[in-house]
Image (cartoon, rainbow over all chains, first blue to last red; front, side, top):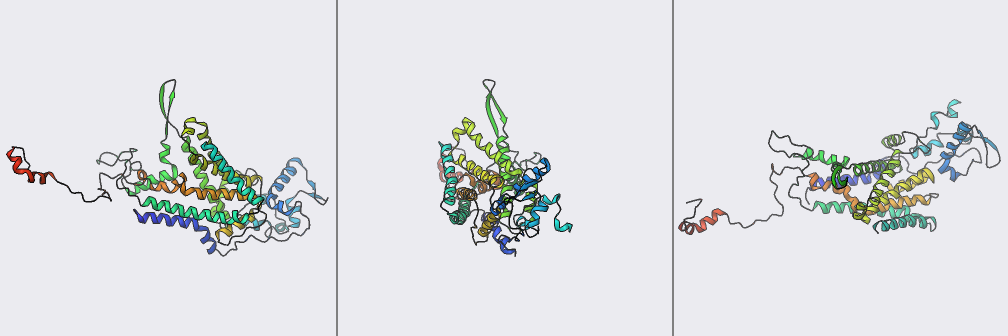
Length: 126
Length: 330
């Protein structure tokens, strides 16, 4: 083999890069399992849980546009109840703890939503 | 034919996991076994290719006429285009790997105004290639949010910059737009231009379509047909910590994405994509142009039996003298 030193160095760097996630996660003491979410206080969400898992941001985005642009502030929930389209007042009235609900998954997935640039977190007000 | 063949293979690669996970429920096969096999093939295959290249001797420097070679002290040498030192070679290599310097020199010739042959710089391939490679690097690096826990700050910063304009929700990544635009351009460049289509092989169309399939399936999953992304991270974290799990509720589209990536990893070491490693073994890029400064001995040289003129003269001195031929030594 020619230039063995350089070639082996290159292969070692390549292997280090490929196996980096393994070392990183073994070295870190954080749990690799998905986070547990706090149980909601209400019994009925506005959509079913599986749909919400993937699409809650669509719902909030639609709500924002409907409320801010069209002034449609209310919707009728699945059990016929009239509810306000509001992140702080409706969503967080059941999912009372942002830290133990929203943030757990968002931190796990490294998602940084800009909801709270404008909205206040109810707990912080109280 | 080459194009048609590539399209059929891509269609099979998409339909296979779609049907087998969606209908037959083989999610452990496509979520755990196939990715592990693909990674093993990729790592071992790439190392084998590299070792194969490393065994080939490159005894002589191959000067390319891109710049003035180092010569007399009053002639200014071109340090990067024709490097004569290791640092110069490193500089040329960096220019090549990071900015595709030699592709930047690309020219085209065309008949213009009837029969006038015109040569002109053609930067489109360079621009498309550069756009694809850099965005692909960023996209791959961004995916480390699925493989690392806690997610390091540099990945978050990259995501923040990539979603700088805050368009849509989930925020549209600039690299997602650029990579699909670049790949689409690179693909249609081969299809539209008849001369390029004539020289294009299945091995040219297939990687572009495969990468396009990966990008589109990923984009589709992020912006349109969303799925439980926390479940996906559970799966990927299980893979990288060697304790695989396949959580419930992950859509078949994710398995299509993962299967196409696995196909890319398997295809990589045995195709033109291996230029990622091969670029470092390019003799015209990685050797200093110092033929005139240093003597390079051919490693497969064996001692050749020679008969020098001096020995020849010694052997035939008397005869040559008799014939009155001029001699070096009397």
